Amino acid sequence: MLNDVIRGLVSGVTFGIFKSVKSGSVESSALIIFTNMIKIEHIAIWCNDIERLRSFYEEYFAAACNETYQNPGKRLETCFLTFPGGGVRIELMQRPDVHTPTPDDRLLRMGYAHIAFSLGTRQRVNDLTARLKKAGYVHLDGPRTTGDGYYESTFLDPERNVIELTV
Image (cartoon, rainbow, N blue to C red):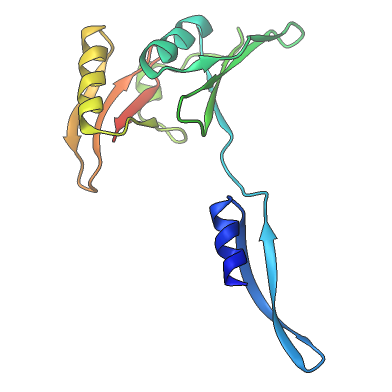
């Protein structure tokens, strides 16, 4: 049974033993197999200029964007950004009746705080920090090591969403 659990973990299937079940005079463990794990599939960002934001994430984070979807009835335009490492995607959404918060509202408010991108090394954080600064994007802080051990640098994207570059 242990070999089955190990094979399952290696193949991406998670096993969990939850309770013992009596079967006549034989006690056996009930093995529950989970193949549908909960994960964050995507996050969505309202934006004023979907093409500008799309270009930013394509240029600086190597994102690939699907074909833009348009819903004329709702006056909605969306596209999904996929990143080279896979994982969570970002949906960019634009609609003319969605208002832009004031600059003060956007930086300190309840709810969404930032998106963190793991770049893999300190050098990559340093390099992208330099590129974004040179391109004129608003640099908020870093690179620095935080009190909880993260090496990070923070910026505003073209729509003033906070992005964090980390190892």
